Image 1 (cartoon, rainbow, N blue to C red):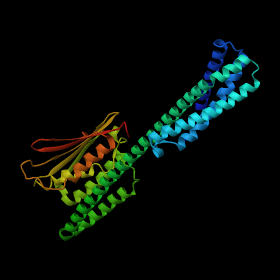
Image 2: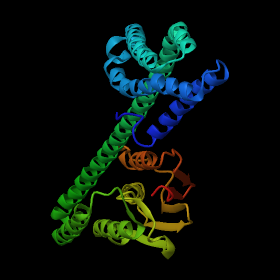
Image 3: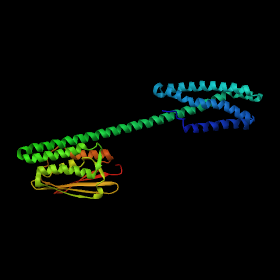
Image 4: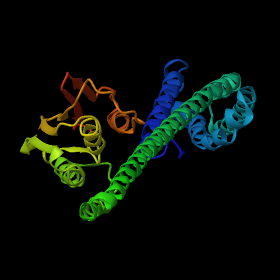
Length: 348
């Protein structure tokens, strides 16, 4: 930490001592009847060295601190340094004033006031030392808060990266399993699926590592993913979208929708013989982006067991990014399952 009384703070430090010097001279003139020239000279000779001692005492504070000597030892050591330092400066200023003073009453007064000068000087220095420690404590507290905030951000980013790294292999493994199955039943479709998967991965890996991108970019990426799924399921999978063009430049986390489409296919196509329709709707206002993905499903069939990576992943990512736990809601009836997302834009 740099000296707290350097720069603009030195102006306030100087003003404080100017007030003390003026008060000292005023009391000498008004209370004890000494001339203004004698009162001002006495005040300057006594207080200016104290002002310099107060400035240089910052380096002693750095050496004697509770962090390396303990509170009790620090109080004792600082008290000794202050008393000894003030006493030496007071005796030096006392000798200097005695040299130029020609008023006998003033000399008698100086000898009588010597203990009070040491007391006042020690009091002023104790105030300065307390201010130093207070400023240092405040500075260290701010640094600690900044370090903790930086650590929280690092942990948050690490957790987000973990969630994304968890999602990508999950999707790739599922796609490769599908390709493997198609190579036995329909090699041409397997070949088409490999090409589309390659395009999807090229777009995904070719992006920057930014956590957020636009709705337009996300939908472009998701269309590639859904093309892959259409190769697998053909006419059984139908898609529709109702996208407000005003929302295309809004932002959302990258690859956020992929696990939701995957869930819609998993609990739709796999669990019923009928065709499955997946609909995407998107609307927005100044503060939020609203997305909904709905699919028809058979509520009477036994649900497939899985690891629950997809929806949990989406919830965790949104909560980490925006600090709100209720940005994902589920709505379902006997025939339709819908996932609603609310994505704040004010922090984007």
